[in-house]
Length: 555
Image (tube, rainbow, N blue to C red; front, top):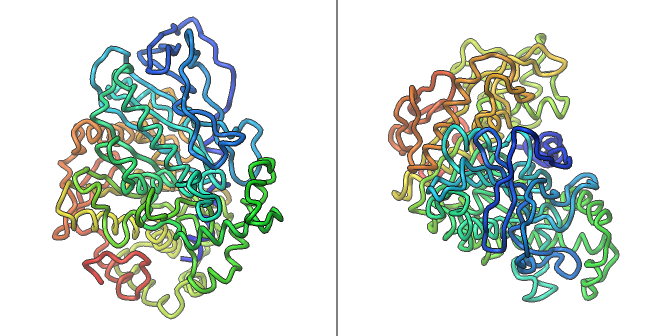
């Protein structure tokens, strides 16, 4: 799992380019018209264009800056007159480097709806990716217009606090005013869901039929929300996509990270209030040092790597806001009756190989002897057994193909299957397991090896943004077949949002996952249900105890 740790740790850097929008002054063009709607706090002016109403930068909670830093936000105050909702709100303070467009006061959301007509449409609230340190609810690839227009749903996306600003655990030193501080980023999303409950009917949405979903870090956020009492009243179903958040940060680890932050800032814990005056840029500099400091700490030497994004700021299992790990050792009882979808992309690792420049194993001269040498530091004495198993189950695969398969299933697949199994064991609402498998022909830079189905490629597909005339996602390639796969995926997602059971025209019936024949929907131009997929491979991972998330029935 060492490479997974390394590259998940870099996720905030990797995803910055694809999750942050370009901020420009919005103006109404000739083919647009203003539309005004009344929310609980006041009137909002959005625009209607090409059959979709869009409201950008809608505030859903109040101030976070100044004395509100690390607290729950101030109350959102009503406004007089009509407030423009024509520009995206500023993103949260971002990890890695200070982004001048980001702000502490970042609690804004965006809404795409077919019409503000009082119709009760399904509401799809998306949690953006970028680990827990990057991203926004305004990235171009996740534009919700096509879902709204072609599938008659309402799409909502939030900005929320990230990184140290979102997850610095202060309760032990700062008292009850800072209760929940280790989960502020998640509680921000809950505030967004509360706003949706109160207001979405005015935007043509049904407040009693809300789906939460997210990819990568957004999948991990969704995993947490699925287990949070504060979120439970505000959504009805969920989808966790390439981001299996089985475990989050133990409280003891969060305490250790907090100590490291104050040490780096040269602030004594008894003088903790001084952190409220530290410039944001200095806080981000410290945030970037913490993973290395944690990795070298006595705590990690004793307990091992912790967190979805290893040794980094993340939601804290504080016993209150997040009472327990989301899916370890059980699926959360609080969401037993809420349907769930979960899955991953077949070639997740292609994305990380590209950004880490670790493409040697994808060159045409990469041999099985080289594969053995590549795997040994990670898998040790089990390497030979792993390669033999994959050569048997994939008899026509090259050494490069097996490297990709092994790294991808370890990256996202094993944890996703554990989620499906643990949800199925509850015998409550159904869980639906998928593999996204449409193959991009675009080549990974500096190789002749195609991307296949890399991490993050599903975003533009499930938002139905792979359509004729639109610029393809930068991973997606140019084959026209992608339009069909994108429509399939979007229809499956929106039907699930509407009914709690995914379905689409020209797609086989998708059975709920169970522990007998273990059905998986493979999503492509031609979709198919595969039973007990990866049976031999999973038996291998269990036999050598390499799965860090053991499904209960295999222990």
